[in-house]
Structures are given as C-alpha cells and as structure tokens.
Image (cartoon, rainbow over all chains, first blue to last red; front, side, top):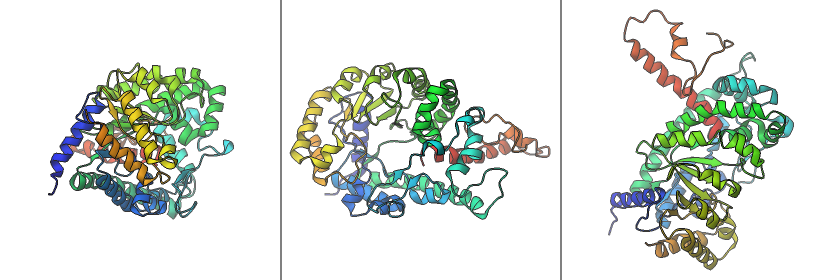
Length: 398
Length: 56
C-alpha cells in the first residue's frame, strides 16, 4: 500500500522539532548528516556528487528513501565545485581534477606567508568588511577576479556573471530538492541557514589558522575588533537564510575556536564574547542554532550552558557525550555520539551496542537525535549506517 | 560615489540607496518603489560575497 508521504512528513517534522525543543517525541528522530556516503551507497564517485550536484541530490534522496531517515540535509557534499570553478576559487581541491576521483573535496589551508588576508589589513577589514571582501579578498582567492585598479580582463567579468548565476541556480535547486525529499520519502530537510563564529571565519578563509594564532599573540586587540566588525554581518546572513517557519535550525559549523587550537584566555576574551551575542540575537528572532561542534569542545561546555534554554541543539563529535549530557542535558537537545571510525571500521554489532549505550545514557527523557559524530563520508560501511538506523528505530521508541 | 570614497555599508547592503540617489535625477514617480527595488537587487550582491566567504 502506498504510504501517505504528507502524513509521514508531518509526523517526522513533529518528531524532529519536539526533540530539538528538548521534548520527548514518540521515538528518537534519526537525522544523519550523510555526505560522500550517499555517493558510495548510490554508486557514484566523489567527483560525480561534488561536481554534479544533481547526482548528489539523487543519491541523497535514494538514501533518505531506502534508510527511511526522519531528516537529512539535501546535499551534505555542500560545496558544488562547478560553482567554485566559475568563481575561480583557489582554495579547493576538486575530486577527479586536483585529487583522486573518489576522495572527498578538500580545503587547502594557506601557507603562513600566503594567507588570503595580510596581517596589516585588519583595519581595512574592520572599517568596511563587505568592501574588503569584494576589493581585496575575492581578487586574492580567485584566479579570475581582478582588484580595483588592475587592468580588467574577460575572465574577471565572466567570473561575476557565471558565479552569480551559478549560485542562484544552485540555491534554487535546493528548494526543489527539499520538495522532492518531502514528496518521495516524507523526509524533512534538517537545517536552513549558515553561521560561523567570527573567529573561526578569520582562521578559515582570511588569515589561515597559523596566521590567526600569531595574531592572537601579536595583535589580539585587532582580532577582537575584526570579530566585532564581522558580528552584525554573520548575524544578518544567518537570519536571512533561516527557515521562515522557524522549525529547523540554523547551523553553526564550529571549527578551531576551542582548546587546544586556541588558549582558554582567547576563547573567553574573543571567541565566545563575539559569538554568544549572535546566538542570543538569533534566538530572539525565534530560531534555534545547531552547534555542530566539530572536534572536542569539552572545556567550553559550561560556557555554552550560559545560553537560554532550548536556544541550541548541541551536536557531539569527539566529546564525551555523557559528559556533554551531564552539563548541557538539562537545557538543550543533543545529537551525535556514534563515532565515524566505528562506522568505518567497526562491526554492525559494535554499532548497535554503541547506539544502545548512547540512547540509555542521554536519551531517556527525550531531547536527543541519533546521528554519527561527524558528517558521514565514503569510508562508512553501508551495513553500519543501516545498523545505526534500524537499531534506533526499534530501540528508540518512548 | 567613486570606488575610493569610504562608505558605511550596513549588513545586507553593498551600495546604499542614499549613495545611489545622489546619481539620479529628481524622482518624479514612486520613490519608495525605486528604493525598494534598488535595495532588493543590491542585496543580491551582498549575498554573493558573504556566501562566497561562508559557504564556498
């Protein structure tokens, strides 16, 4: 008998939202952030899903339908390299072109003396972040874009036309993808909108990690001022991409703002004071933020507990999820806790045992979403992802 | 406005309407419509550069 996809979607949305609001749904929602895993499952290479987003969409829908997930991301292999080529971005290694066809795309960290932003450019960034990005940063990260004052080129002009139209095409395609997920398998699109911490984006795309840590020692006041200058823009971008119905969260991809990448002093004086107000402002607008806490953030859990009840969902990567639950579990929904190495190298029996341990330890009162610790790439075994899904569906009933 | 002049660019804005207005003849029609369309399309440029930074 054909399933009523609209009823299924409504049931899943309610399950997912109830858990995220720290409530107890009918059962634990299953929301894998499946990236290159979808290629492996659907028979595509990493090059195919990274360079041809329609193949990534197709593979994601196949996984959502076959595994019967409650929610997932329309395309977790998010960086469409057709777009990055159109803009001429230098910092990506593209599968099948720069790296092997079945290796996931890579971000190339700049050398210390070749950062995308120079240390003496802080004042320019602080004075006019948008102008700096267009006039200085983009010409530096693109092989095609020319800075104001440089001789113009055909490829400079073309990069803006191709880049702008490609971005519009890609974002529009996500709307269609989300509709297809809903109609074909009743699957909820798990997130909407993007946020990064000001200090993280300084390291990721401007100064590089090495450049940032030098700056934290040599010019910490400038780093703080730059983070403050970025705050209103990052807040604006996050809110402008948020779910209008305020169901699914904005996601913050948390990278290297934690100990030991930075000192506790720098976390307390720069990272957190320039991120916390953004989260509070987003919450005032009625949106939750999914803290996708890549790596280990254990030393900072007490700081996160300062945030308003239910304002975030805390995703555990390499943290001890039981410790995270002890500190944050009274206030926030948690997700994750099933390690990617287990999914890649463990047995299905070990995966089921770990899922039981996590569910027994953190999910008894609701407020938990099943997921791997980090985005699932093509090293995960299909049978292990299946075991995580099926065990949770059977054992995670309240 | 020249490219070298300092300008305060608020979130969501590349070229503020007040700057653009200086280049235009007196608006005889619907000034609010002119402003809205300018700002809506200008915001696409803002989306472009900030999404390049954050997402790509």
